[in-house]
Length: 291
Image (cartoon, rainbow, N blue to C red; front, side, top):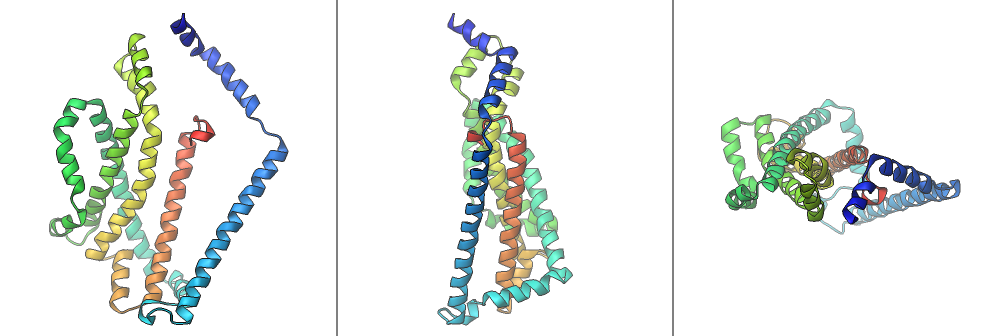
């Protein structure tokens, strides 16, 4: 009787009824909406206040020479460099080169890492065989591979993509594998008893459960792809923000260094926000509390 009751509740009609009821129950009066808008405004003002405090502390340190002047620049000097750099092509050319390599590495690592992670979770015997080698390669400092990539590909975009790929792919392998393993065993047993096929088991139970974990890995991976590309450019490259940082540090241009760091911070924030938008759109079927 309990099994029949569970199956009945899972019918499309019952699901539609629950969805409609949740939609009606989820409606909030306009008064709560205004409070929510006020909360967002308060949060925004608090974030602006934190930024003002950081810039003020930075100005005090630089103005009163509380630190070595060779490693500090005032906010005004950095702002002046940013204003000048925005009007010239060098910054945009280097930023384009860095983003291009980062996004290629991120795309390749996403396909390969998610596929391998899901495959390992679905094939536990094979995973036990290869897991020591995956763990050993993941533990290796990837920067040690940079000389090999430079010899193999030269100072090209392939060298940057290869190094960033080796950093990002393991993040996605771990996230996908953990996501599949997070499926409820009771649901899997019930589906097996009901005669659900293996393909349906994956598409209806395992993969939907794994998607939030995979997206968590993707949001982390896009930042590490940018980081891996910058490391490759710092070690050796013909273009990119990392190469420009290397040149600026060689002539002690601290205003340019801090300006480039701000550009990277803004770029990473925008990439993370875009991933968040995509995640919320693709996971809009989930309750808001779980997103």
